Amino acid sequence: LPDREWLTGLAEVIKCGVLADAEIVEFLEKTDLAGLKRNAKMIEEIVFRCVSIKARIVSHDENDTHGVRELLNLGHTFAHALESVTGYGRYTHGEAVSIGLCASCRLSSAMKMLSFPYVRRLETLLERWRMPTRPRRSVPRAALLRAMSRDKKTVGGKLRFVLPVRFGKALTGQSVPLPLLNRVLNDVGF
Image: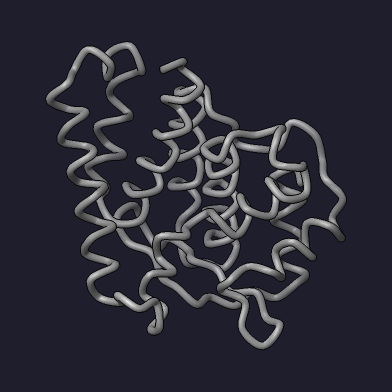
């Protein structure tokens, strides 16, 4: 696969690490794409860990009725909105997820749920792996917020987010005041 496709998949791997397995983040901080490509055993281990995370979460909410599966959407409220507003062609899904992870971590930090060093650590990791941490161009804020409001986690017209509290743990159903969300969108470059 071309490197861009590897990185698209790795954004979801990093999401799994931030969500439920800090060791994935720690490993990726110590290697690069060339090193990972040469290590088939490590690729197998990472895929196994990510699939196990997904299976564990889905098994607790098989019918997607209890909100547990929302965990798998860490970063995706921002990512799906970015993809929608930019016409599904400017960013790969992984690039949008990478930006969405940064936005989610910054939002969690702004809500005093995640300490800021985690935000910097994530952004440093993504930059090292040549993944975007902010959109290449700003997007119309009203269109972005409209797209976010269509997110499946929105309840009663209120946006809800999956937000990390540390690498390896995140919480679902987090409501965010609009002024704070707008501040974070500005910080991330939306």
